[in-house]
Image (cartoon, rainbow, N blue to C red; front, side):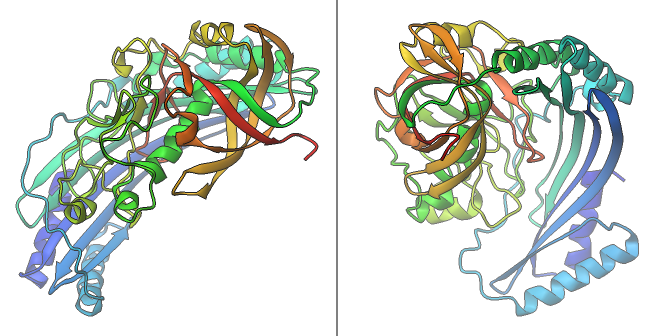
Length: 456
């Protein structure tokens, strides 16, 4: 039985039990295969396939959402019965936006056969290339492939299905006193080259030997793609979320020039080569949604509930949590204005070097680590640099530096006249959220607030 047939079957089961209920069902089957390595040797190879069913039922002004991964006939019958019993006694839900009407998808998604049919040998070959390219340094990390077939059906007659697939690799190389990392993701197996990533990680590790400590303060920075991806995740979760805007917990102001003219943010899961399903958990077809256009705020992403409250339409960004709408496929457009889908792979290109060459006095940062939100309204974040940072003087790398703690408002760092340059090379960075994919170039920013060094 396909996921779409399965979803339709559960809709009919609920209809038989409570004919007047509004019902929506999501079914997704995700196959994850993971090969891990440590001490430059593969030590784990695992694979798992899980079908997840999410049932939302609305009856007499009350709503209940239930999830299960047990899909036998007996278990599903019990699952539906428990959900129906629960909705009869649930609290009233005045914000129920109704069911998604029938609508066609823009695409069925990108699920390339090279990823869907990838073998342990395919992953092992990339790890071997990573280890060899590290030139004798100790290495560790993983290579994974993941693909999802999903479907949605509701009692209003709306039914859709789609797929997505991803390969991701993340590795580290270490000397006795420093480390370097490299990571990349793609919808296509051939785009992730272990040799390129291993060479990059090893070069960073060797260049990090003899790091010195600098005083905290505001510095000009070049943030590599791996650090910029952390900014995109925070902006997606807290800033571009329709629920946060409705509750005045976001910095967004529609129509205002809140960011530098070099900054354009787009949520896009449907262009060719993108990682992500073509519909959300409410069954709304996804679309290309511009959140910030050349620095001007257009507006947040929405699900049906947040859109109803705001008097607008869903952008197809519902998730299976009461968190609000989430821009799972957020991209920062590169400087050349080309579509981010045309980025030419995860190779260490010249775009970061070009940004560094323009820096007068500042810090090159590889990665952010353990970032946490301090104030969602202004999106002040704190975290650490990781896996390599260097002092730059007059366009030349002078010395590796020890890790900093930073405390910085991300929107402020991207504000008008704060962005010196945007890189021309965008990559997808691996993410642990199953359908999330953040794609971005490097950034050259005028000011970044480092509030602590290695000594405190």
